[in-house]
Image 1: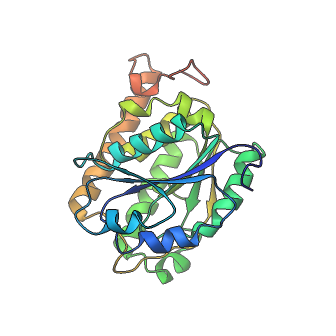
Image 2: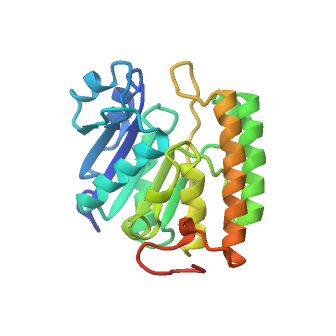
Image 3: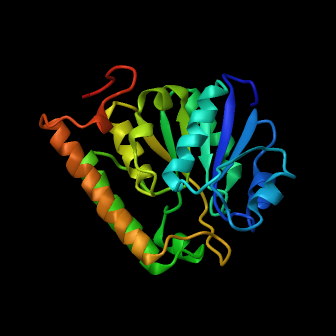
Length: 255
């Protein structure tokens, strides 16, 4: 699929991913991308040493910018390299990279502009894949609330596998988003507000000791900030303008 219908760049926001990054890069089907960009957010393990041996473009942050700050660099670099399609993949090996070609096909034919990997097709499968009960319940509960508030029907809003058409990254004002974990929720709600078509594709869930996971404290903060983002969105729609929901290149939806 490389070169078929546009340039494809896979970006990986990496932080302490030394235990898994080589495995996830090896799993990405060859021929479905033009370049892999790994942005290391001042890792304290062997991430840089291992990534430097892989067939990727390695970009290093001098200091830790946070998960959202890392993604900003990822998307900025992908746009600068003229990507038509961008796949964001966590390098923690929780997501099956073999699904990438199918995700790109859905974007290419114009069914969706934003596509998420859905790890929760069924409760039994998610738990059998190692997803902890608290993580499952929190994910499902928050996703139900978000779907109702945003008028969507996504399997989950909290996926580390996301694929975008270039127009999304050119329009969503992601540079204004948080440098923390809530970046993902902000970006997705911005995409919905600006009229982009959002969907998902099933991916097998893989949880194991070396896979990354947000601790209870940051996870609770993430949930609160996610709901606050919805409050800001509703206020914006009522006339209290918020730059988070104003398109960079002109309105596409309600902005």
